[in-house]
Length: 326
Image 1 (cartoon, one colour):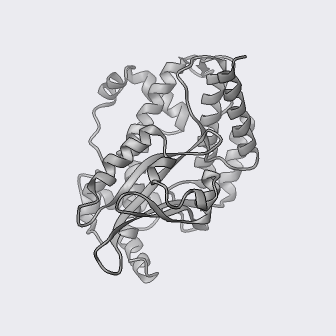
Image 2 (cartoon, helix red, strand yellow):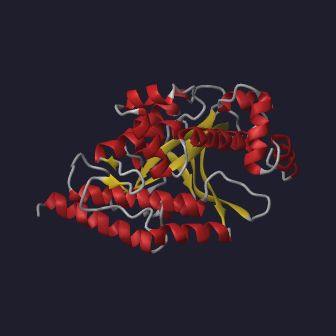
């Protein structure tokens, strides 16, 4: 076994240790290889993603259960993107002492693709009077694992009102609901997320359809496109599949198999999640929030929002104001 493959095995070993200790937010950096080791990497990354989605339950709220907001990482940057402050959790997530984070460029802790995205999304626009938004970035961990996270950022001025700063926050919503844990346990026991690690095919017993390694990559690309920009107007699923280099049936089937929901429902879910953040952390009118989130009308947005969360956008805004967040 060559040195490169030995390092890949070490990365897999580190990933398994992290998952065994309950850390499902790490990922293994993908390679261009199409072999057994890469199949294991794909399987572990998918398993970690699905486990975290169920246990952290990002973006869902239920008034009948206890929902806890957890700040995973926070940073304050100067206008050039240099880290001036980071919380202790950021050091733990990146497996670095804070002394090795403070004074470094924020982009130094990102993968190459995320580094480019961050520069285009934020740093190049810091001269604007006000900059605020969210972006999906992938952080690098020192043992070659990756930490994909949705990052919320906003600019503000210091006390002199002359020097601009950037506040970065990564927030997760942790829902300790027995039903979720029971459902997760059942899925794991039933082997729904068990991958065939010595083969690049994913076989469905129900329809006998085979998803190749290439198919899985295209379906994951569809997921990432929607996740990064859910407010966009998407083409028909047939045209979307063609753009990705696959067909409509395989895209629909594979997406449901990998993520447990339909493409349409996932788009609505992500639009509502973004809207929830804007309601809580901005004073934008609901009509503007509906438009920015990708909904054609405020009434349609309000109806779907209440169906999903159990309360209206207006109720959430009132509750946020009463707790002093706005």
